[in-house]
Image 1 (tube, rainbow, N blue to C red):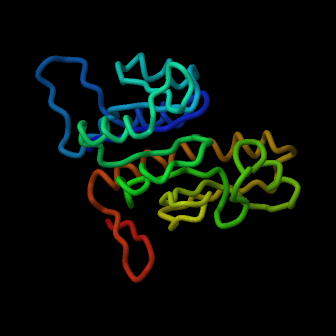
Image 2: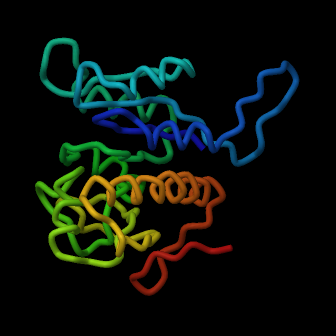
Length: 210
């Protein structure tokens, strides 16, 4: 399955996706049938740490936007179609996905959110903002959510969630560290389920089948 990954920062989830896939280093070793191939890493930044990770694995990188040196979204859509992208993964991408990309890849764009939606989501709820809100609420459990992307922030159908006990956390930063560990487990797992064609919509719910 060919995917594109959108990032805005250091790319730790990108690294987790890469590490979850086999990268044979010997001639003659074949990839498994459901291998996930990252065909593009995209960012709203001209430079970010995630690009450094991508370049180590010879993955093409794209800065998207209207600034000099960036590619426009309509050009990116053309690239995705040409390269037969089957899934777009937002892994710490902080911008709203434009309508033309949403329309072309409807039902094929997912996002990972560092909290248990529908709580602690919406515009402005990203990164440490989320973990501070969770900490200030005195919540005892947090986690990560993977959901389909729609026209508004964090409102798409939930695909999967994973919880972590944060009752002993003494700061938002500690919660962030706990949740990030969960993200690195959950995101590659869900992507692999897509590659295996094990994601279903049944009675208005999203189900992962065995």
